[in-house]
Image 1 (cartoon, rainbow, N blue to C red):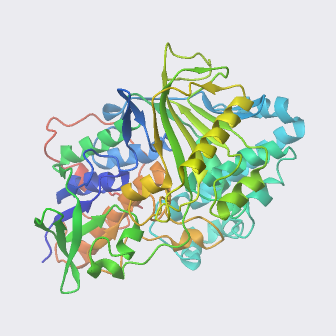
Image 2: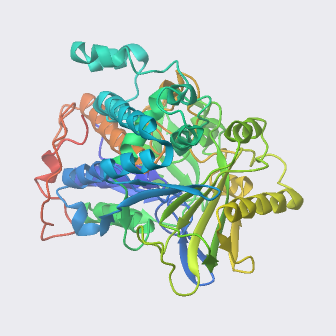
Image 3: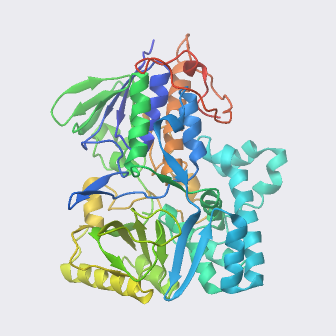
Length: 531
């Protein structure tokens, strides 16, 4: 009879969510993490005494996390302080600027002023289509286990047949956007959503327009930075009894008699378990990084994008930054053509997260401010290192792009640089790819690693697995991995205290924290964790 011992490799968001949900159901959960703190890619790096978010910076789909906390009989609001942003993103093309807002009518009016009434109507139609795509795929695909096209159609059912036939998988995102916008700058702006999962708008399917709906539904600014989200989910797990061991890298996954038996740490210590959830990139399994017996897990496909990232504590001048800012290149096709040739773009689009800015007033903080500055790069981190001359050219191109819009960043300010090779060292077997498999072509979404592997008792979670990249998707992957583990446990045992396979999630309720933070409540143990 199987017991409840679970090892989770990696304290990224997917692993943290799995740990919290399983601990709330009475499982004996231990999380082992090579780094010194939780978060995975959701990390901070110290620059001149300032902790700067060095990974994801955009928090959307708050409801995903509310549902996870609710499933553990807790309230997200009790663990995390966050407020909605009125200005979602500020965009610039040289001197021209366009803001998108949480208020859809304000965005439509801004687009009308920027590009004319026709494109304002196009935005209205685009937004409706993005919402339709999101709602069609939310429950049957994003919240459910990995599917093939036939299974997805079955899940959507007769009522969703029309949506199933119009998911637009065979049209590129770039081509589809031409049907909504005549101004090429707007096509460029909304095509950028493909890069949220590390892909090219020229190769990604139009289905990915649904990402625009996720952002338009609300961007949240987290007090204490993005690392506070990782801390909140870790605290949720501790509340249920999960244990966390940091600076504890795993050497290999133990496989005995054809199924998972635990892990062996680099230190030589062995930790026995009945199931393991791997919150690492599946490519690390396929490459044998976690033991030769685990290579039966599938290898990754075409890599997503990487990045060159500067973290700076610097004075700025000349442009009214908000929290999220994008400075577009003058030739988007040329930019992605260079990336597809495994080269840095001569003139890149630049993203700037001004982490001390709040909303739309554009007022700079007194003194230096914390910046994350990012340009897309090919995932070549396991090849020859980038020559210093190429890195210097990339920085000059980045600064030139900012200056076109009037933004200057003190070149003498303390700065930390991260390249694809640094990302490869932090996340082995990825080449520095930040989003797992690229979402190129109609079948890409069906080819991601699912929650289960071909090794019994070994599961996967994280942004490189189904349902995809980004914080909410990584959280859903952790939820799905936990649900699959519980269902498999129930199917091989005559007893099941807590499992409700196939249960439907309810809308999140704001509940008070229980009196005892060290033990799961009976209410939590009865809540389903996935649909």
